[in-house]
Length: 380
Ligand code: PMP
Ligand code: GLN
Image (cartoon, rainbow, N blue to C red; front, side, top):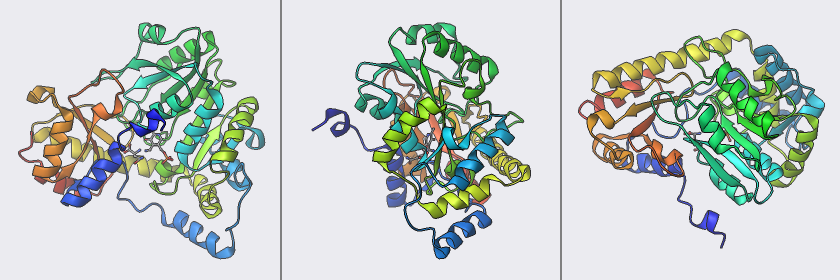
């Protein structure tokens, strides 16, 4: 049996959600919102099923959605894309990541990964034969600098896998960070696979900057997005991949044998949704920011040391000031004794883990957040 997969633990999101179901805990672990998603977008998906969008759509995605993705990124991020040659639809960002890594990495190629890392990254890199080179980020700011990149890049670097905004840290990297990373990618002739699924979920007046727009990156970036996070519809698994034609052509070869395509009714509904006016995206951000602030102040009032979160659905607390240095044991206690599920951030490290940080998902109704806070009254 393949040791990479046979020795892997079950993903922490599944473990914690199962535990939450079994114990009746409030689930602030796995990142999914309470918000049912925009009704008009859901209605479009239902209508599309009834009206006949039910057979295999084109492998690259339905043209309506590929055009909508290009128009959406032009409008929101100033990125110009040729929808016919530079946009492909996948079954979620997860498939896009798997396909990109399968297509771009050859055994022995080095891949720069930033820890904390989304849990799918490392198994996919290893299975593709990649050799991981880690940049280790630390709380409270989770920043990287030139020295850290210089230690991770080498003449064998083929791919850099970067997540911005960063799950679980809630960091939003700005122009100076991205330009620094771009400089290293160009100098090492590396391709950046940039996971931007949280691109619309940024707070405090910040705006998301796509790595593909940085100097020298247009021809060497794979930009990955997901409708799940844009419309609070995480179960839909409709992803977008944007890249220069030479790269996208290779990624399409992987996609054709991974899933080939994605449910067509969901694609046409997402195409419709991406055209929503700016107010929709602003309201979504404002609503989530209010939830973040409500939960952060509630945690702080209960004695938790809350780390800053500038994006994503997530907020972290640092347990070190409480003298607690085992995030896994703390989360076990939280779910069993206090009835609240959270995620230990050490699960996002492959080595040299940070063990004192715990992640909560705040994309919940006020009632759920307040209910969780009431249970956490004496947890700190
Ligand atoms: N990348 C990151 C950083 C994520 O947080 C998630 C899920 N929240 C994904 C990828 C997976 O996205 P999808 O559900 O579209 O596959
Ligand atoms: N991305 C979600 C999170 O970070 C989980 C997705 C999953 O369950 N695979 O919580």
